Image 1 (cartoon, rainbow, N blue to C red):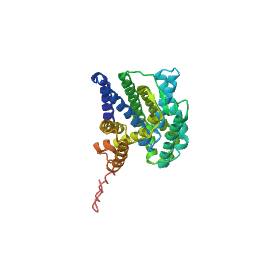
Image 2: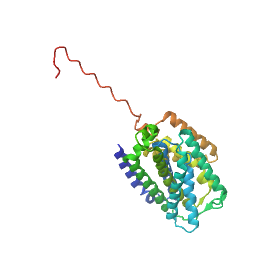
Image 3: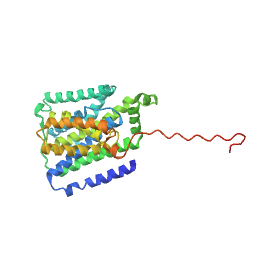
Image 4: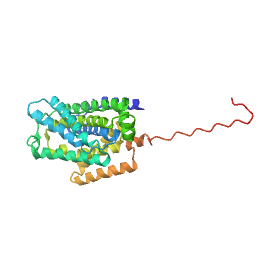
Length: 324
């Protein structure tokens, strides 16, 4: 089953490479580019939430760190590629620093701590001169829609297949699942949960930051509201829960469906911004109640592990007869 999904993913990736040749409408290509970005954000979010069992409401902090690092370095003469890579490194270091205290917490305490982390980073961006304060930073325009489509696709594709190997084929994924199911039991087996959770945190933060850097250069502007707001974390959470946590295909399905709804909503109901947030919350609640395994789990009829059938009792041999 996993091999068939991998082959299907490779086929979809190959088909996406042909999209710019088939789509000549700049607006439609821009929509496809943003959809791919959200797929990457959802997949990166699922590393910590789905495989490790820790909901990270500070996902937007690393997205903003990558965007601001890229913008600041490019303003000082760096090229786009090294600036985006440096943003990923900064986010990885930040994940280690933030993860050492927060990953010792569990459940709602960890979620609140990461939410406070995102708010703290946003306040720093609002106050610091280096980040441009509330006015943000403008980047030099580079009006090449196909370039950003292929860059976004390359980053997301590399992230997806790397995570597929680490989480679905290598023992690392089984270790994270052991922490998710029973952290104390995993510790009793000789695993180091804190170290593994920090590694998962870094794996989630780096691609998120690189995507933030690509986003900043793509839209030529970054500010605390767009890059460090709650919407990045909230939408990633909805996409993962709706599509199916603990898989890599589930977040892709959820990202495509939620982004399609978002595009239609903003096209016809853009004046009702509060309503969109309400719908996101309702989608989470409905997914938890009616689709506990997400859309992907529902389609595959995944009901969780079942109890093996009890073997039938062996017949008792008649008295006086020898057993075979």
